[in-house]
Amino acid sequence: RVDIARLDHLMNLVSELMITRTRLTQISKDLDNTALGDTTATLNRVLLELQDEVMQVRMVAVEQIFSRFPRMIRDLSKQLGKEVDFQITGQETELDRTIVDEIGDPLMHLLRNALDHGIEPVADRIKAGKPAEAQLLLSAYHRGDSVFIEVQDDGRGIDTERVKQKAVQRGLIGSQEAASLDDDAVHKLLFQPGFSMAEQITDVSGRGVGLDVVASKIASLGGRTSVQSELGKGSVFTIVLPLTLAIMATLQVRVDAERYAIPLSVVDQTALLKRSELDYVEHRLAMSYRGQTIPVLDLRQALAVPTSFSPPDDVYVVVVFRGRKLFGLMVDELLGQEEVVVKPLGRFVDRCPGVSGATIVGDGSIALILDVISIA
Image (cartoon, rainbow, N blue to C red; front, side):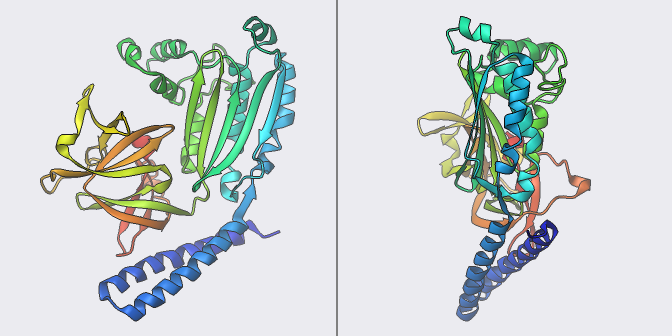
């Protein structure tokens, strides 16, 4: 068994090598030296192999977390008088050890929530024409550079009208705004601080704490949380996590004179548009994309970047995921893809809105890594 502290130190050394590699690559381009370029390419290939080997050693199966839950579900279902068939799939899926150690509590919260609020009592299920035994599924799988973990039940689903009423009662939104919300916007309310559907505090699901603690924890790990639900048929809560916290594939963009990094795991497509191709829908900037209209956010305004020149007629839009929905980020220039080493911001700027970390780029300058979920 390898000491995790040594693995962390080894990963830090690889990260520093990657920063040096990036700067060396930039110097090679600036000097236009063929021999130096060839040497840098060889160094890059060896470093990528080293990085991959270190990553593999750090990876562990999510089974070590998933294995905690069958007994918990069995005990809680008895306590609640509910019949539940609990299944687990994809337990062999691997994640960075650091992430696996942190996802136990969020998953436990989602499972308890499904058991307490999602799955109906036996009598209610029979009355609704459902089998007495409910289905509860915990699954994990890889897709690209991310791991998806889902908690799915065939329970009562989310009553969006009731969620709106609760949100209005708790002062999170006004009644007029509630009437205009679509299902996706209503589902997002579930993850807002201060929101809870519980009529009384219990020891089973939230203990008076809402799903915002789940979303907050997952976001701190560089992930995102979403939910899909159909009233009377059940819900699927989805967590998307990066394979590792240390190194991230990004799309580098420029806004005015500032450089930013957008995680590639949330990027769907990029587009070059004329400003005239953008439109306003319900007082929000929007664009047509693959047969649908999606909102567009001006990153300059979202991050309060000072303007030093007049915006050009041509604009770049980066289409990104927020859960299962899409929206566009308007930027001044696309600088290309780059694998970066993620550095924390530190305690003095730890809660900078829209930013999850920083990295050192090829010219030695610093680029902020964007948290597109909090920007939207």
